[in-house]
Structure formats: structure tokens, C-alpha cells
Image (cartoon, rainbow, N blue to C red; front, side):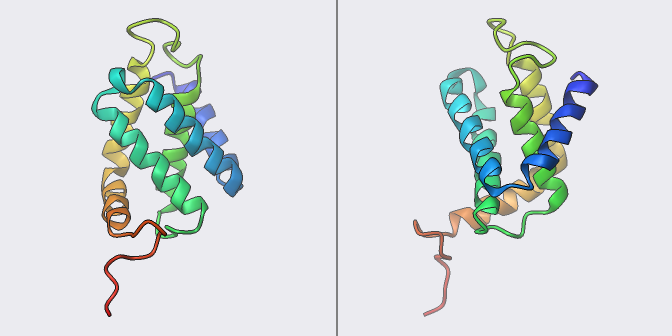
Length: 136
């Protein structure tokens, strides 16, 4: 991964996280690109969906437990994923998403446990976002 591209993505991530609306837009845009490339992304598609979901739920104040360092990394990964001209430009057929996958896999090693905690939380929610495990 090109360090300068990653550094720019991390800097933008800090700015995006200051705005709930910008965070939600980032999550939505990355979900749309991931959906469009789901066949080429394989397992990474699910990881991108999970990361975007965490960012969205945090920005909507449904999941305030997300650590700040994890949010910065999630936002930076999603920004990097959306950059058309990153280390390997996305328009290069067959290899354009390879650097994105490398970035995602590296980030997963850093924040995977936090994303798994989010997944457990998310899976315990009812459709309105309330805990489905409430005692009667």
C-alpha cells in the first residue's frame, strides 16, 4: 500500500468522523461500491459490510461502544476503498481492487476483534435497533 495514500485516507477519516452525516454517507457509498463489486471481493465483501455497518450504527448513536481508534481505521479503510486512484487504480481490470483487499486484510488484523464485538451486538438487535435480548 502506498503510505501517502493511506496517510491521506486516515487524515480524511478524522474529518469525516466529526460529522454523523458524512460518516453515514461514507458508509452508504462504500456499501454501494462493495455491492457493485461483490463477486470480485469475495470474503472481503462481508468485511466491508460489517465495517460500514459499524460506522453507520456509531454515527446514528446506536453503537457508541466503538473505540475511536477502530472508527478511524474503519473510516480510513472505507475512504481508501472508495479512492479510484489509490496505489493500484481501480479501473485496471483484474487488479484494481487488489490493493484495497490488502488494506482491508491488514486493517482486519488490527480491528477484527472490535468488528466481531460489533457483529455480536448487531446480531442481538431487533429491526428497530433495540436489544433483542432484553429481559421481560
